[in-house]
Image: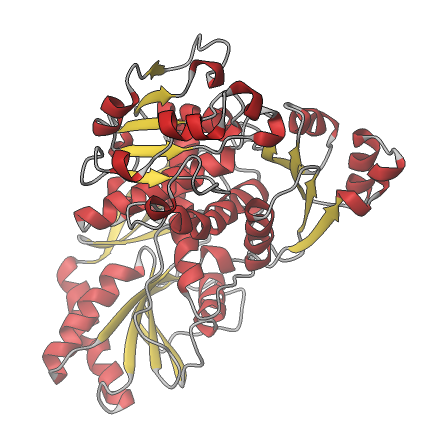
Length: 327
Length: 189
């Protein structure tokens, strides 16, 4: 396995890469449980977050991760930057590169923007923190990490012992605005790569225009699909990407596709509910359901830091298994 | 070098080829028993003592020493494991792979920590381990037990308890396993 230069898509990692990320993240999760949750691993490295789109969780999570690795963190607030004066993305990247930055964490409303930045970057590693409708790889990885953690806890085993075999045949149901969701795309790729059986459930208008080449099936009956799911991944209706116009009304959406108190009863006893956040209570998830123990949203947020530490470590400091040794 | 690194490193990577045996399994057992006695003697018992095995080679040795010390003195002994990958000074210079999750079960403040490793070579792993231990509290003292001291130190570090002093050349490899201690070389696969 060769070390990916950048993390733009889940496919940059492959199965071995995903396994390595989950494994290393387990070590960082231990670091987080310490009374001093900080290690000197990336001392002297500079990590910059470039968010052209709003975010709470992802930005805080990346910055926490970088700081716990002792990297220096620069965060560019686009609203107060020269972007507002009309500076192009390319010039912004040039500037950041000239400052000697080692990793660029980028979120952009245009699909493919991080790919473009990666082509321009000479030194910096680029990490995609969400680009338009395209991908959000770290979110998918932390979903896998969280699901494995829950499965391991139930078995009384360590997540390491489970490896990635626990995803083989796992029935994952992704529900909601799949058309506009970068999380859904990354999840399909990640769960799919590890042999999970992924099913999509959404109103026809919120399914992608084409599912060709996707290793998924589309649920004919949402209620029946819930009964068959080990993991339910709920997505937010992306109002900022115009999903409002794809459904007749929010109430109708909730009635047809929301995880309501009635629908929770259809779930198997062991089914896990994930949500990438931000949750819109009362729309895709009922408020009571959001607070149930099987809903692991808070765990996902905590795990996000460990998983992003692993990504930063592997891109900036660590070595990948099988990498040629430079003596 | 630890197991995962060894198997993943190229072109050196790959297989340890043993040339000669230095200690038999029974010799290792006897050395561990002697070192256990030495630790107890020096610290006047087991009070506040915690054994910390370094991943991965030091962990089985620490486990065996803990058993033997508990047998000698009675009572239970705290046992931890430590992975120093995140504290290494050669990150980016050579493959650094976290081996396993660290587990230090108690706050180290005021404790006597016995670090246990299989082979003491450059001393850089121990330097990293000392930094790592610091993050778990201020130990009263830290002592070092190794099965083999093979020389070639690059830092001012010395062991307190040694199974065997073994002069080696830099190119050689020392392997401590269930079947004793062997000296050999790493051959590419």
